[in-house]
Amino acid sequence: MGLGAGIEVTPPGVSPTLRVRWLGRLPYAEAWDLQRAIWERRAGGAIADDYLLLLEHPHVYTVGRRGDGSHLLIGPDRLSEVGAEFFRVDRGGDVTYHGPGQLVGYPLIAVKPSRITDYVRSLEQALVATLSDLGVEAWPEPGLTGVWTRGGKVAAIGVRVSRRVSMHGFALNLHPSMEYFGHINPCGITDRPVTSVSELVGRRVSLEEAVEAFVPRFAETFGKTTMETQMAAFVRGQGRDRDFEVDRLLREGTFSPDRVAVSLSGRTRRLPGEPERPPWMRVTARMDAEYLELKKLMRSLDLNTVCEEAGCPNIYECWGMGTATLMILGDRCTRACGFCNVTTARPLGLDLEEPHRAAEAIHRMGLNHAVITSVNRDDLPDGGSAVFAATIRETRARSPHTDIEVLIPDFKGDPEALETVMAERPDVLNHNTETVVRLQREIRTSANYGRSLALLARAKRLYAEGLVKSGLIVGMGETRDEVLGALADLRAVGVDIVTIGQYLRPSPRHRPVHRYVHPDEFQEYRSYGEALGIPHVESGPLVRSSYHAKSSKQAATPQSPGRTPVVIGRRPVARSYI
Image (cartoon, rainbow, N blue to C red; front, top):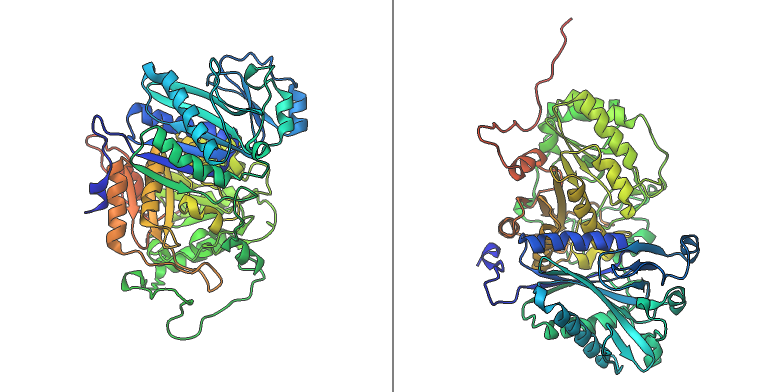
Protein backbone atom coordinates (compact mmCIF):
# COMPACT_ATOMS: atom_id res chain seq x y z
CA MET A 1 0.00 0.00 0.00
CA GLY A 2 1.36 3.46 -0.86
CA LEU A 3 1.75 6.06 1.85
CA GLY A 4 -0.99 8.20 0.41
CA ALA A 5 -3.45 5.36 0.88
CA GLY A 6 -2.65 5.21 4.58
CA ILE A 7 -3.67 8.73 5.53
CA GLU A 8 -5.93 8.90 8.57
CA VAL A 9 -9.31 10.28 7.58
CA THR A 10 -11.31 10.42 10.79
CA PRO A 11 -14.84 9.05 10.31
CA PRO A 12 -17.65 9.91 12.75
CA GLY A 13 -17.27 8.12 16.07
CA VAL A 14 -13.56 7.31 15.57
CA SER A 15 -10.91 9.01 17.69
CA PRO A 16 -8.48 11.08 15.58
CA THR A 17 -4.77 10.35 15.63
CA LEU A 18 -2.94 11.95 18.53
CA ARG A 19 0.43 13.38 17.48
CA VAL A 20 2.67 13.76 20.54
CA ARG A 21 5.71 16.04 20.31
CA TRP A 22 8.35 16.61 22.98
CA LEU A 23 9.94 19.85 21.77
CA GLY A 24 12.53 20.52 24.48
CA ARG A 25 13.02 24.04 25.80
CA LEU A 26 11.10 26.68 23.85
CA PRO A 27 10.38 30.32 24.80
CA TYR A 28 6.77 31.00 25.69
CA ALA A 29 5.99 33.38 22.80
CA GLU A 30 7.14 30.84 20.20
CA ALA A 31 5.17 28.03 21.82
CA TRP A 32 2.08 30.24 21.97
CA ASP A 33 2.32 31.10 18.28
CA LEU A 34 2.86 27.42 17.45
CA GLN A 35 -0.23 26.49 19.47
CA ARG A 36 -2.33 29.10 17.72
CA ALA A 37 -1.26 27.93 14.28
CA ILE A 38 -2.15 24.30 14.98
CA TRP A 39 -5.37 25.31 16.76
CA GLU A 40 -6.45 27.41 13.78
CA ARG A 41 -6.06 24.54 11.33
CA ARG A 42 -7.55 21.95 13.68
CA ALA A 43 -10.56 24.17 14.41
CA GLY A 44 -10.93 25.10 10.74
CA GLY A 45 -10.83 21.50 9.54
CA ALA A 46 -7.56 21.80 7.59
CA ILE A 47 -6.12 18.99 9.72
CA ALA A 48 -7.93 16.08 11.37
CA ASP A 49 -5.27 15.17 13.94
CA ASP A 50 -5.08 16.10 17.60
CA TYR A 51 -1.78 17.30 19.05
CA LEU A 52 -0.11 17.10 22.45
CA LEU A 53 2.85 19.48 22.68
CA LEU A 54 5.18 18.81 25.60
CA LEU A 55 8.00 21.18 26.44
CA GLU A 56 9.93 23.22 28.98
CA HIS A 57 9.94 27.04 29.09
CA PRO A 58 12.57 29.54 30.16
CA HIS A 59 11.39 31.63 33.15
CA VAL A 60 8.05 33.28 32.39
CA TYR A 61 4.94 34.51 34.20
CA THR A 62 1.54 34.49 32.50
CA VAL A 63 -1.79 35.95 33.58
CA GLY A 64 -5.03 34.47 32.27
CA ARG A 65 -8.35 36.10 31.46
CA ARG A 66 -9.55 36.10 35.07
CA GLY A 67 -6.47 37.82 36.41
CA ASP A 68 -5.97 41.56 36.78
CA GLY A 69 -2.26 41.32 37.52
CA SER A 70 -2.62 42.01 41.25
CA HIS A 71 -1.26 38.56 42.15
CA LEU A 72 2.01 39.27 40.35
CA LEU A 73 4.02 40.59 43.28
CA ILE A 74 6.92 42.21 41.40
CA GLY A 75 6.90 45.06 38.92
CA PRO A 76 8.09 45.05 35.30
CA ASP A 77 11.49 46.43 36.35
CA ARG A 78 12.09 43.45 38.63
CA LEU A 79 11.10 40.92 35.97
CA SER A 80 14.26 41.59 34.01
CA GLU A 81 16.30 41.34 37.21
CA VAL A 82 15.06 37.79 37.85
CA GLY A 83 15.38 36.88 34.16
CA ALA A 84 11.68 36.28 33.52
CA GLU A 85 9.28 37.34 30.78
CA PHE A 86 5.62 38.29 31.27
CA PHE A 87 2.57 37.68 29.06
CA ARG A 88 -1.17 38.26 29.32
CA VAL A 89 -2.80 35.27 27.64
CA ASP A 90 -6.22 34.02 26.60
CA ARG A 91 -6.53 31.01 28.89
CA GLY A 92 -8.61 30.72 32.03
CA GLY A 93 -7.25 31.27 35.50
CA ASP A 94 -4.98 33.85 37.08
CA VAL A 95 -1.20 34.13 37.32
CA THR A 96 1.17 31.20 36.99
CA TYR A 97 4.87 30.54 36.55
CA HIS A 98 6.66 28.39 33.96
CA GLY A 99 10.35 27.63 34.00
CA PRO A 100 13.18 25.10 33.74
CA GLY A 101 12.44 21.88 35.61
CA GLN A 102 8.73 22.05 34.87
CA LEU A 103 6.88 19.85 32.36
CA VAL A 104 4.41 21.94 30.37
CA GLY A 105 1.77 20.32 28.19
CA TYR A 106 -0.48 21.88 25.57
CA PRO A 107 -3.19 19.52 24.30
CA LEU A 108 -4.79 20.71 21.06
CA ILE A 109 -7.66 18.27 20.89
CA ALA A 110 -11.36 18.23 20.03
CA VAL A 111 -13.52 19.18 23.03
CA LYS A 112 -17.29 19.68 22.95
CA PRO A 113 -18.39 23.01 24.49
CA SER A 114 -20.65 21.14 26.92
CA ARG A 115 -17.74 19.03 28.15
CA ILE A 116 -15.13 21.64 29.10
CA THR A 117 -15.38 20.89 32.82
CA ASP A 118 -15.08 17.17 32.08
CA TYR A 119 -12.02 17.95 29.97
CA VAL A 120 -10.32 19.73 32.87
CA ARG A 121 -11.19 16.87 35.24
CA SER A 122 -9.69 14.41 32.74
CA LEU A 123 -6.45 16.42 32.63
CA GLU A 124 -6.33 16.24 36.42
CA GLN A 125 -6.95 12.48 36.28
CA ALA A 126 -4.09 11.96 33.78
CA LEU A 127 -1.74 13.96 36.01
CA VAL A 128 -2.80 12.10 39.16
CA ALA A 129 -2.11 8.77 37.43
CA THR A 130 1.28 10.03 36.23
CA LEU A 131 2.23 11.17 39.72
CA SER A 132 1.24 7.78 41.11
CA ASP A 133 3.65 6.17 38.64
CA LEU A 134 6.35 8.53 39.93
CA GLY A 135 5.65 7.57 43.56
CA VAL A 136 3.50 10.55 44.58
CA GLU A 137 0.01 10.37 46.04
CA ALA A 138 -2.01 13.20 44.54
CA TRP A 139 -5.61 14.28 44.07
CA PRO A 140 -7.86 17.08 42.74
CA GLU A 141 -9.35 19.44 45.32
CA PRO A 142 -13.12 20.11 45.24
CA GLY A 143 -13.83 23.64 44.03
CA LEU A 144 -10.28 24.19 42.79
CA THR A 145 -8.39 23.44 39.57
CA GLY A 146 -5.12 21.56 39.46
CA VAL A 147 -3.50 18.67 41.31
CA TRP A 148 -2.67 18.64 45.01
CA THR A 149 -0.49 16.65 47.42
CA ARG A 150 0.36 16.55 51.12
CA GLY A 151 2.99 19.22 50.42
CA GLY A 152 0.75 21.53 48.40
CA LYS A 153 -0.15 22.14 44.78
CA VAL A 154 2.09 20.29 42.34
CA ALA A 155 0.39 20.95 38.98
CA ALA A 156 -1.53 23.94 37.61
CA ILE A 157 -4.12 23.82 34.85
CA GLY A 158 -5.36 26.68 32.70
CA VAL A 159 -7.15 26.05 29.40
CA ARG A 160 -9.09 27.68 26.64
CA VAL A 161 -11.60 25.91 24.40
CA SER A 162 -12.79 27.74 21.31
CA ARG A 163 -14.43 26.41 18.17
CA ARG A 164 -14.41 22.96 19.82
CA VAL A 165 -10.61 22.75 20.11
CA SER A 166 -8.54 23.18 23.27
CA MET A 167 -5.47 25.36 23.83
CA HIS A 168 -3.04 25.91 26.71
CA GLY A 169 -2.97 23.14 29.31
CA PHE A 170 -0.96 22.21 32.41
CA ALA A 171 2.35 22.71 34.20
CA LEU A 172 3.76 19.94 36.41
CA ASN A 173 6.46 20.98 38.89
CA LEU A 174 9.29 18.44 38.72
CA HIS A 175 12.31 20.33 40.03
CA PRO A 176 11.84 24.05 39.23
CA SER A 177 13.52 26.88 41.13
CA MET A 178 10.85 27.29 43.79
CA GLU A 179 11.87 30.86 44.66
CA TYR A 180 10.17 32.01 41.45
CA PHE A 181 6.80 31.11 42.98
CA GLY A 182 7.56 33.65 45.71
CA HIS A 183 7.01 36.46 43.21
CA ILE A 184 3.35 35.52 42.68
CA ASN A 185 0.26 34.25 44.44
CA PRO A 186 0.04 31.11 42.27
CA CYS A 187 -3.31 30.93 40.48
CA GLY A 188 -4.49 33.75 42.76
CA ILE A 189 -4.48 31.47 45.81
CA THR A 190 -2.85 33.05 48.88
CA ASP A 191 -3.27 30.37 51.57
CA ARG A 192 -1.98 27.16 49.95
CA PRO A 193 1.66 26.22 49.31
CA VAL A 194 3.26 25.03 46.08
CA THR A 195 5.56 22.01 45.93
CA SER A 196 7.46 19.88 43.43
CA VAL A 197 7.69 16.17 42.62
CA SER A 198 11.36 16.10 43.55
CA GLU A 199 10.63 17.57 46.99
CA LEU A 200 7.92 14.99 47.57
CA VAL A 201 9.94 11.91 46.57
CA GLY A 202 13.33 13.07 47.83
CA ARG A 203 15.14 12.70 44.53
CA ARG A 204 15.47 14.61 41.26
CA VAL A 205 12.77 13.49 38.79
CA SER A 206 13.80 14.34 35.24
CA LEU A 207 11.69 15.67 32.42
CA GLU A 208 12.43 12.55 30.41
CA GLU A 209 11.10 10.34 33.22
CA ALA A 210 7.97 12.45 33.54
CA VAL A 211 7.28 12.50 29.80
CA GLU A 212 7.65 8.73 29.59
CA ALA A 213 5.10 8.37 32.40
CA PHE A 214 2.64 11.03 31.24
CA VAL A 215 2.17 10.18 27.55
CA PRO A 216 0.57 6.73 28.07
CA ARG A 217 -1.54 8.03 30.96
CA PHE A 218 -2.85 10.88 28.81
CA ALA A 219 -3.69 8.49 25.96
CA GLU A 220 -5.42 6.12 28.36
CA THR A 221 -7.46 8.84 30.05
CA PHE A 222 -8.60 10.42 26.78
CA GLY A 223 -9.17 7.12 24.95
CA LYS A 224 -6.53 7.76 22.30
CA THR A 225 -6.01 4.43 20.54
CA THR A 226 -4.09 5.80 17.54
CA MET A 227 -0.99 7.71 18.58
CA GLU A 228 2.16 8.90 16.81
CA THR A 229 4.97 10.10 19.09
CA GLN A 230 8.17 11.93 18.24
CA MET A 231 10.65 13.24 20.77
CA ALA A 232 13.41 15.83 20.59
CA ALA A 233 16.60 15.09 22.50
CA PHE A 234 16.55 15.55 26.26
CA VAL A 235 19.47 17.87 27.01
CA ARG A 236 20.93 20.09 29.73
CA GLY A 237 19.88 17.88 32.62
CA GLN A 238 16.46 17.13 31.17
CA GLY A 239 17.14 13.39 31.11
CA ARG A 240 19.77 10.73 30.65
CA ASP A 241 23.25 11.90 29.66
CA ARG A 242 23.88 11.70 25.91
CA ASP A 243 26.67 12.50 23.48
CA PHE A 244 25.75 14.18 20.22
CA GLU A 245 27.64 13.56 17.01
CA VAL A 246 27.71 17.18 15.90
CA ASP A 247 29.55 18.13 19.11
CA ARG A 248 32.23 15.55 18.31
CA LEU A 249 32.53 16.84 14.75
CA LEU A 250 32.90 20.37 16.07
CA ARG A 251 35.66 19.31 18.48
CA GLU A 252 37.46 17.54 15.65
CA GLY A 253 37.51 20.70 13.54
CA THR A 254 35.18 19.39 10.81
CA PHE A 255 33.73 22.85 10.15
CA SER A 256 36.84 24.94 10.81
CA PRO A 257 38.31 27.19 8.09
CA ASP A 258 41.68 25.62 8.93
CA ARG A 259 40.48 22.05 8.60
CA VAL A 260 42.80 19.62 6.88
CA ALA A 261 41.31 17.81 3.91
CA VAL A 262 40.86 14.09 4.40
CA SER A 263 40.54 11.68 1.49
CA LEU A 264 39.27 8.14 1.41
CA SER A 265 41.44 5.50 -0.17
CA GLY A 266 40.18 2.67 -2.32
CA ARG A 267 37.66 2.52 -5.12
CA THR A 268 34.49 2.80 -3.02
CA ARG A 269 35.39 6.02 -1.13
CA ARG A 270 32.91 5.01 1.56
CA LEU A 271 33.14 5.35 5.31
CA PRO A 272 32.82 2.13 7.34
CA GLY A 273 29.21 1.00 7.36
CA GLU A 274 28.10 3.30 4.56
CA PRO A 275 26.02 1.77 1.75
CA GLU A 276 27.20 1.83 -1.84
CA ARG A 277 26.03 4.81 -3.83
CA PRO A 278 23.24 3.63 -6.15
CA PRO A 279 23.00 4.45 -9.88
CA TRP A 280 20.26 7.05 -9.39
CA MET A 281 22.65 9.20 -7.30
CA ARG A 282 25.30 9.62 -9.99
CA VAL A 283 25.59 13.10 -11.47
CA THR A 284 27.52 14.05 -14.60
CA ALA A 285 29.65 17.19 -14.40
CA ARG A 286 28.79 19.47 -17.34
CA MET A 287 30.92 22.60 -17.26
CA ASP A 288 29.39 24.19 -20.33
CA ALA A 289 29.40 27.83 -21.35
CA GLU A 290 26.45 28.80 -19.11
CA TYR A 291 28.13 27.23 -16.08
CA LEU A 292 31.45 28.97 -16.71
CA GLU A 293 29.76 32.29 -17.43
CA LEU A 294 27.83 32.19 -14.17
CA LYS A 295 30.92 31.23 -12.16
CA LYS A 296 32.79 34.17 -13.70
CA LEU A 297 29.90 36.53 -12.87
CA MET A 298 29.84 35.46 -9.19
CA ARG A 299 33.57 36.00 -8.81
CA SER A 300 33.49 39.37 -10.58
CA LEU A 301 30.87 40.62 -8.11
CA ASP A 302 32.57 39.00 -5.10
CA LEU A 303 29.45 36.97 -4.28
CA ASN A 304 29.00 33.54 -2.72
CA THR A 305 26.54 30.86 -3.78
CA VAL A 306 25.20 28.10 -1.58
CA CYS A 307 25.50 25.90 -4.67
CA GLU A 308 29.29 26.01 -4.27
CA GLU A 309 29.62 26.34 -0.48
CA ALA A 310 27.30 23.40 0.25
CA GLY A 311 28.57 21.22 -2.60
CA CYS A 312 25.14 20.86 -4.21
CA PRO A 313 24.92 17.96 -6.70
CA ASN A 314 22.63 19.99 -8.98
CA ILE A 315 25.08 22.81 -9.57
CA TYR A 316 25.82 21.80 -13.18
CA GLU A 317 22.15 21.47 -14.12
CA CYS A 318 21.04 24.69 -12.42
CA TRP A 319 23.99 26.82 -13.50
CA GLY A 320 23.65 25.44 -17.00
CA MET A 321 20.07 26.82 -16.95
CA GLY A 322 21.30 30.19 -15.68
CA THR A 323 19.89 29.76 -12.16
CA ALA A 324 21.72 29.96 -8.84
CA THR A 325 21.07 30.53 -5.14
CA LEU A 326 22.96 33.55 -3.84
CA MET A 327 24.35 33.37 -0.31
CA ILE A 328 24.57 36.72 1.45
CA LEU A 329 26.07 37.76 4.79
CA GLY A 330 29.44 36.21 3.99
CA ASP A 331 30.68 32.64 3.82
CA ARG A 332 31.30 31.93 7.53
CA CYS A 333 28.50 30.50 9.65
CA THR A 334 28.15 30.91 13.42
CA ARG A 335 26.61 27.43 13.75
CA ALA A 336 27.63 23.89 12.84
CA CYS A 337 25.50 21.17 11.22
CA GLY A 338 26.71 17.64 10.64
CA PHE A 339 25.44 17.59 7.06
CA CYS A 340 26.69 21.02 5.92
CA ASN A 341 29.94 21.99 4.18
CA VAL A 342 29.79 25.71 4.99
CA THR A 343 32.64 26.87 7.22
CA THR A 344 31.89 27.50 10.90
CA ALA A 345 33.94 30.45 12.19
CA ARG A 346 33.78 34.00 13.48
CA PRO A 347 32.35 36.10 10.61
CA LEU A 348 34.65 38.67 9.05
CA GLY A 349 32.24 41.60 9.25
CA LEU A 350 29.19 42.99 7.50
CA ASP A 351 29.32 44.03 3.85
CA LEU A 352 26.66 46.71 3.39
CA GLU A 353 27.24 46.80 -0.38
CA GLU A 354 26.36 43.12 -0.75
CA PRO A 355 22.60 43.70 -1.37
CA HIS A 356 23.45 45.95 -4.33
CA ARG A 357 25.85 43.41 -5.83
CA ALA A 358 23.38 40.56 -5.33
CA ALA A 359 20.68 42.56 -7.10
CA GLU A 360 23.09 43.32 -9.93
CA ALA A 361 23.89 39.62 -10.36
CA ILE A 362 20.21 38.70 -10.44
CA HIS A 363 19.60 41.37 -13.07
CA ARG A 364 22.51 40.29 -15.24
CA MET A 365 21.37 36.67 -15.07
CA GLY A 366 17.89 37.72 -16.16
CA LEU A 367 16.14 35.49 -13.62
CA ASN A 368 12.39 34.99 -13.43
CA HIS A 369 12.84 33.53 -9.95
CA ALA A 370 15.71 34.47 -7.64
CA VAL A 371 16.64 32.55 -4.48
CA ILE A 372 18.56 34.37 -1.74
CA THR A 373 19.90 32.60 1.33
CA SER A 374 22.55 33.18 3.97
CA VAL A 375 24.76 31.69 6.62
CA ASN A 376 23.62 31.99 10.23
CA ARG A 377 24.79 35.28 11.73
CA ASP A 378 24.11 34.91 15.45
CA ASP A 379 26.77 37.59 16.01
CA LEU A 380 24.42 40.27 14.67
CA PRO A 381 21.63 41.69 16.87
CA ASP A 382 19.04 41.12 14.12
CA GLY A 383 20.60 37.93 12.72
CA GLY A 384 21.13 39.69 9.38
CA SER A 385 17.45 40.33 8.71
CA ALA A 386 18.07 43.93 7.66
CA VAL A 387 20.49 42.74 4.97
CA PHE A 388 17.88 40.27 3.70
CA ALA A 389 15.34 43.10 3.55
CA ALA A 390 17.77 45.40 1.74
CA THR A 391 18.59 42.67 -0.79
CA ILE A 392 14.89 42.15 -1.52
CA ARG A 393 14.40 45.91 -2.01
CA GLU A 394 17.45 46.27 -4.26
CA THR A 395 16.40 43.27 -6.34
CA ARG A 396 12.83 44.57 -6.75
CA ALA A 397 14.17 47.96 -7.86
CA ARG A 398 16.58 46.39 -10.37
CA SER A 399 14.38 43.48 -11.54
CA PRO A 400 10.74 44.34 -10.79
CA HIS A 401 9.34 41.29 -12.59
CA THR A 402 11.50 38.74 -10.78
CA ASP A 403 9.92 36.51 -8.12
CA ILE A 404 11.98 36.56 -4.94
CA GLU A 405 12.43 33.57 -2.64
CA VAL A 406 14.40 33.93 0.57
CA LEU A 407 15.77 30.97 2.51
CA ILE A 408 16.32 32.34 6.00
CA PRO A 409 17.85 31.12 9.28
CA ASP A 410 15.74 31.06 12.44
CA PHE A 411 17.05 34.43 13.77
CA LYS A 412 17.10 32.78 17.23
CA GLY A 413 13.32 33.10 17.35
CA ASP A 414 13.36 36.92 17.20
CA PRO A 415 9.91 37.96 15.89
CA GLU A 416 11.08 41.46 14.96
CA ALA A 417 13.80 40.05 12.71
CA LEU A 418 11.24 37.92 10.88
CA GLU A 419 8.89 40.90 10.60
CA THR A 420 11.73 42.91 8.99
CA VAL A 421 12.00 40.31 6.22
CA MET A 422 8.27 39.73 5.82
CA ALA A 423 7.62 43.48 5.55
CA GLU A 424 9.30 43.29 2.12
CA ARG A 425 6.73 40.69 0.98
CA PRO A 426 8.96 37.96 -0.47
CA ASP A 427 7.06 35.76 -2.91
CA VAL A 428 8.33 32.67 -1.06
CA LEU A 429 9.61 32.49 2.52
CA ASN A 430 11.69 29.37 2.98
CA HIS A 431 13.07 28.05 6.27
CA ASN A 432 14.32 24.49 6.41
CA THR A 433 13.51 22.17 9.29
CA GLU A 434 16.28 19.99 7.76
CA THR A 435 15.53 16.78 9.67
CA VAL A 436 13.03 15.11 11.99
CA VAL A 437 12.61 16.26 15.57
CA ARG A 438 14.58 13.36 17.10
CA LEU A 439 17.75 14.16 15.13
CA GLN A 440 17.78 17.96 15.49
CA ARG A 441 20.26 18.10 18.37
CA GLU A 442 22.23 15.12 17.07
CA ILE A 443 22.93 16.91 13.80
CA ARG A 444 22.69 20.64 14.54
CA THR A 445 24.29 22.66 17.36
CA SER A 446 21.67 25.34 17.92
CA ALA A 447 18.51 24.21 16.14
CA ASN A 448 15.09 23.77 17.68
CA TYR A 449 12.31 21.97 15.82
CA GLY A 450 9.60 23.85 17.68
CA ARG A 451 11.29 27.16 16.88
CA SER A 452 11.37 26.28 13.18
CA LEU A 453 7.67 25.36 13.19
CA ALA A 454 6.83 28.57 15.03
CA LEU A 455 8.81 30.65 12.51
CA LEU A 456 6.95 29.05 9.60
CA ALA A 457 3.62 29.67 11.33
CA ARG A 458 4.51 33.29 12.03
CA ALA A 459 5.59 33.86 8.43
CA LYS A 460 2.25 32.59 7.16
CA ARG A 461 0.38 34.82 9.59
CA LEU A 462 2.43 37.90 8.66
CA TYR A 463 1.89 37.49 4.91
CA ALA A 464 -0.89 35.05 4.14
CA GLU A 465 -0.77 35.82 0.39
CA GLY A 466 2.85 34.67 0.12
CA LEU A 467 4.03 31.07 0.03
CA VAL A 468 5.79 29.40 2.95
CA LYS A 469 8.26 26.63 2.25
CA SER A 470 10.43 24.18 4.17
CA GLY A 471 12.81 21.33 3.40
CA LEU A 472 13.89 17.95 4.79
CA ILE A 473 17.05 15.93 4.16
CA VAL A 474 16.68 12.15 4.40
CA GLY A 475 19.24 9.38 4.73
CA MET A 476 20.73 10.72 7.98
CA GLY A 477 19.22 8.15 10.34
CA GLU A 478 15.56 9.09 10.40
CA THR A 479 12.78 6.54 9.95
CA ARG A 480 10.03 6.52 7.35
CA ASP A 481 7.37 7.16 10.01
CA GLU A 482 9.32 10.14 11.34
CA VAL A 483 9.31 11.72 7.87
CA LEU A 484 5.55 11.21 7.65
CA GLY A 485 5.14 12.85 11.04
CA ALA A 486 7.28 15.80 9.97
CA LEU A 487 5.10 16.26 6.88
CA ALA A 488 2.02 16.29 9.12
CA ASP A 489 3.64 18.94 11.35
CA LEU A 490 4.50 21.14 8.36
CA ARG A 491 0.93 20.86 7.14
CA ALA A 492 -0.34 21.73 10.63
CA VAL A 493 1.47 25.11 10.61
CA GLY A 494 0.39 26.05 7.07
CA VAL A 495 3.44 25.28 4.92
CA ASP A 496 2.71 25.45 1.16
CA ILE A 497 5.82 23.81 -0.34
CA VAL A 498 8.04 21.05 1.04
CA THR A 499 11.26 19.77 -0.50
CA ILE A 500 12.71 16.36 0.40
CA GLY A 501 16.11 15.20 -0.85
CA GLN A 502 18.86 12.67 -0.21
CA TYR A 503 21.73 13.47 2.16
CA LEU A 504 25.17 13.35 0.54
CA ARG A 505 28.19 13.52 2.82
CA PRO A 506 30.26 16.62 1.87
CA SER A 507 33.55 15.16 3.12
CA PRO A 508 34.93 12.15 5.02
CA ARG A 509 34.77 14.24 8.20
CA HIS A 510 31.00 14.77 8.05
CA ARG A 511 28.14 12.58 9.23
CA PRO A 512 28.08 9.24 7.39
CA VAL A 513 25.26 8.43 5.00
CA HIS A 514 22.84 6.15 6.84
CA ARG A 515 20.98 4.93 3.75
CA TYR A 516 20.10 5.88 0.19
CA VAL A 517 16.36 6.37 -0.10
CA HIS A 518 14.84 4.69 -3.15
CA PRO A 519 13.08 6.94 -5.70
CA ASP A 520 9.83 5.07 -5.05
CA GLU A 521 9.93 6.13 -1.41
CA PHE A 522 10.49 9.73 -2.41
CA GLN A 523 7.40 9.49 -4.61
CA GLU A 524 5.42 8.06 -1.71
CA TYR A 525 6.47 11.01 0.50
CA ARG A 526 5.19 13.34 -2.18
CA SER A 527 1.87 11.51 -2.43
CA TYR A 528 1.44 11.44 1.33
CA GLY A 529 2.27 15.11 1.84
CA GLU A 530 0.01 16.33 -0.92
CA ALA A 531 -2.81 14.06 0.28
CA LEU A 532 -2.44 15.72 3.70
CA GLY A 533 -3.16 19.02 1.97
CA ILE A 534 0.33 20.44 1.34
CA PRO A 535 -0.10 22.18 -2.05
CA HIS A 536 3.24 20.96 -3.45
CA VAL A 537 5.90 18.47 -2.34
CA GLU A 538 9.10 18.34 -4.42
CA SER A 539 10.59 14.99 -3.44
CA GLY A 540 13.45 13.11 -5.09
CA PRO A 541 17.03 11.91 -4.59
CA LEU A 542 18.69 15.04 -5.97
CA VAL A 543 16.16 17.57 -4.67
CA ARG A 544 17.53 20.46 -2.62
CA SER A 545 15.62 23.33 -1.04
CA SER A 546 16.15 25.59 -4.08
CA TYR A 547 15.85 22.86 -6.72
CA HIS A 548 13.13 23.66 -9.28
CA ALA A 549 12.21 26.60 -7.06
CA LYS A 550 10.24 28.41 -9.76
CA SER A 551 8.23 25.39 -10.85
CA SER A 552 7.52 24.55 -7.19
CA LYS A 553 6.11 28.04 -6.68
CA GLN A 554 3.95 27.68 -9.78
CA ALA A 555 2.68 24.27 -8.63
CA ALA A 556 1.75 25.63 -5.18
CA THR A 557 0.03 28.74 -6.59
CA PRO A 558 -3.58 28.33 -7.78
CA GLN A 559 -3.69 29.29 -11.45
CA SER A 560 -6.17 31.96 -12.48
CA PRO A 561 -8.29 31.12 -15.55
CA GLY A 562 -6.43 31.98 -18.72
CA ARG A 563 -3.16 32.60 -16.90
CA THR A 564 -0.04 31.46 -18.76
CA PRO A 565 2.71 29.98 -16.57
CA VAL A 566 6.01 31.83 -16.70
CA VAL A 567 8.95 30.08 -18.35
CA ILE A 568 11.50 28.76 -15.86
CA GLY A 569 15.07 30.05 -15.93
CA ARG A 570 16.17 33.23 -17.61
CA ARG A 571 13.91 36.00 -18.81
CA PRO A 572 14.80 38.21 -21.78
CA VAL A 573 17.07 41.06 -20.78
CA ALA A 574 17.00 44.35 -22.69
CA ARG A 575 20.37 45.14 -24.18
CA SER A 576 21.60 48.47 -25.42
CA TYR A 577 23.34 48.51 -28.80
CA ILE A 578 24.31 52.17 -28.66
